[in-house]
Image (cartoon, rainbow, N blue to C red; front, side, top):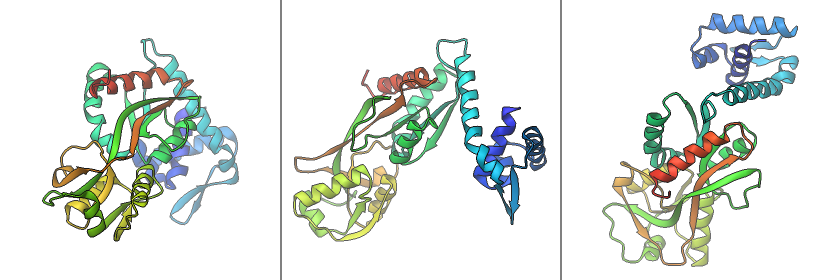
Length: 292
């Protein structure tokens, strides 16, 4: 059984389309169909059925889907372990929050490419909660994310990279003498209370009996900063790593103490085949951030 055919099948199921799976893999639709027919002949069952303009797995296809994913993970692990260098072979499957991807990773990736030009990195941007679950499930080798509001299991390694205290974010031209007075007076753009930074902001306001006039509530620090830069309100956000717009068009003001901070760091499984690869990436990140 050719693992490439299994990968094509998984992509077809996940994308719901032979044409999209073909584009994703850089193949023609005819090649994808040939691979599916060969795989079905090998396992002795139909795996894909058409449903209007999309495709979906048959009952047999559904039953083998998780096993197919597990086999593909095992194949990747085998290839990594067979490396004849001091580090496992890639690709390193790395998750990152949007702010970590734009604010922390660019110089790290530049140095990584110079040192390890043959080790590919697959990067998946996503919120911290999703990245955390994917690392624990073995779907990602590691991630740069916000530390959750609970303890990390001992099966994982965690390394602190940044402390990001809450700050008041205003349009660049706004003058602030009293951040709390500004929060009480100006329209407020609330950071989603279901995420760590948003919960910290809500707790900070509640402790000071502040009930600002909420104009919007959303996740995404860069998106909120953009709205602030357009003069649509002010916000309480972690002091995130960023470069260029929209950061240049907003101003950050320190808050009266005590002020909470979120921790951004790296997480990976201790026993992962590519754990040494993830550790090397994190050590490089620490060097770039001046932590090493």
